[in-house]
Image (cartoon, rainbow, N blue to C red):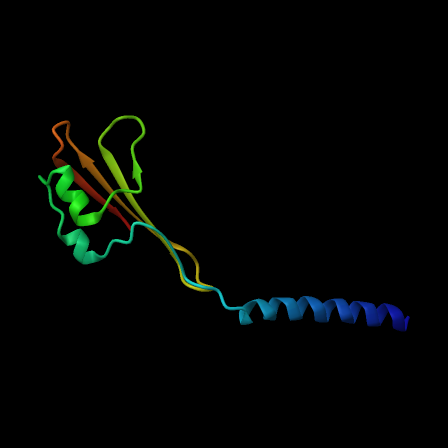
Length: 106
């Protein structure tokens, strides 16, 4: 009887100990993708060429694989134990290479 109580108590202590141990472990900040600030986004406007956008924001992380002129700037960030946040900036060009649409998704 005492053996069952001892084993179950030990298991409970181990489970509680592991869950609190996770909060004590250091998690580094993880940044992935194109880091774009609000000032960088304020610099782009309708009518810019593709070269001007690359000069301002850098090379996009994803270009539309189906041949349309849509670029995606994706930025993911996870700060320590916090939930990961994601920002997506979608830029569309016409067939002459001029910026026609800007969509901010965050």
